Length: 359
Image 1 (tube, rainbow, N blue to C red):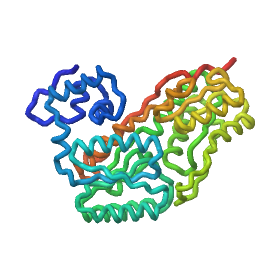
Image 2: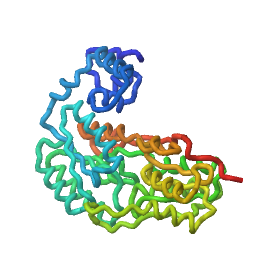
Image 3: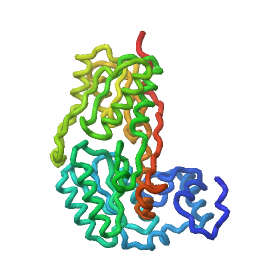
Image 4: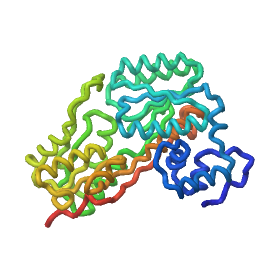
């Protein structure tokens, strides 16, 4: 266990508890929540650190308990949304805030109504918009309207895990991650293992997250003198609702890939969940992963270690993204000032789904 801070009179926070216990912030939060299976040894480390630092979660929860942080999401079923929201909720609880979730289902009119409703709440600290967005022309105007409405109640707009965002220029706070860089790194790893014919499968066209990742892959391959063989993405109409979920085409597109590009030896999937469908389609077609075709994903969520082979992927710090977003909501730095924009890194997690291509 690390040494405790030298100023014991100052009230400790959960991040300091985690550091003293030698565990991640998300693990410390899960110990407190009691809703996740945690080993006894880990729990003892966290509890011991809490006692040493004098950390009191109940005391933190009592502070300004009527203030709220709103979380605007497209789809509550997304693994990114659930991970980020867990981080927001943990930090909100530590700071005596209540976290409220508003799903839009991809409906821009509903999104505007949510902002209008939230802006009537004088106790609102901020609205946090989570996840990527459709690349539509009127977005800056809509964002400007939202900032105006929230400004009337001294609330902030925080953009979280929204790649390629220019919100800070318009007056929003932001917590991002190296979306394109993560894709660059995992595609570079494939190329370094000898793969020369690499394809992309999954995600939506004109979506900030997907397009950024495809661009990262293309840049990595260009650095190795290669080109992306093909990219299979789905089309989505602006303002289309996700209340009726479209059938995911990842499985079908992977089978199509085998027919149209039989020489491909490496596949980059848009996310780990897309990678699951890629692996399933390859298995059903009698293709071995990784000996015939290597597969990599993105996000590093729980399915990455549940499928066989375990998936090489890009680690996305979803919990920390949420934590930082809630911190900005509480501290309310002025947009454009130091600390108003936070960028977290990504890295490749190497597992068993990549092997050199057959000679």
